[in-house]
Length: 272
Ligand SMILES: [Zn+2]
Ligand SMILES: [Zn+2]
Image: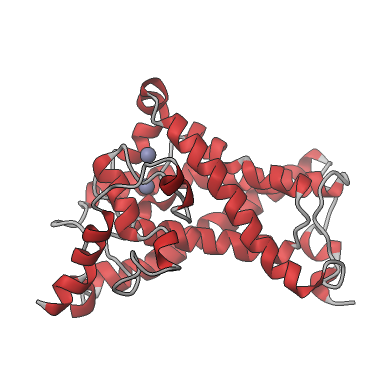
């Protein structure tokens, strides 16, 4: 039997024993934190330490975030990693108890479904994020919780996990819940979470990495870009999406100047 089709490959011990549960939280938090630190550091080295001509041309803000704000973002991201670690172990406990639809055999739903399931989970998560993000912009919730993330007017890639613990909890909930209704292979979950981390880093990078013209492209215009999310940090009332611009289009919350801002961060500067 394939290694990736065995329950023990993912959960090697009984999670319902308290000692194991705590050990698993420590291990998963460590993995989440290392993945955040290593991936962000790679982007940091390329875009912040080794300045190169191409990235200079694509810088979104006039000035890069200070070291003080970067330290602030890392501090909150470490706390978020613990909450994401707890959510990961809860998802495993649901699976062990037989509550979730996580499956092991690649043949059970076929390879087409395996790939599509990653897209389905991203759309569900994106919608959940859009709705909760709009709620977090209500005055009281903003002041109490979401202001932590918006303290970065010009965020650095370290801001990708920089949330108040309550916001981290809100954002940690959907995936364990989605596994209760949508069949997912654990490999899809691992790849999805890694891609979500990279996407969050790119959205806060401070440099536009998508190709010129993406904001008008039939496919690219539906994807959140660094320019799109930088617009959210700058204008507050626009651009609430996580991966896709569907909901911002449908609910009329996409910044009217987005396409022009994107062009300024790519084509215009390159031509000049
Ligand atoms: Zn916000
Ligand atoms: Zn942000």
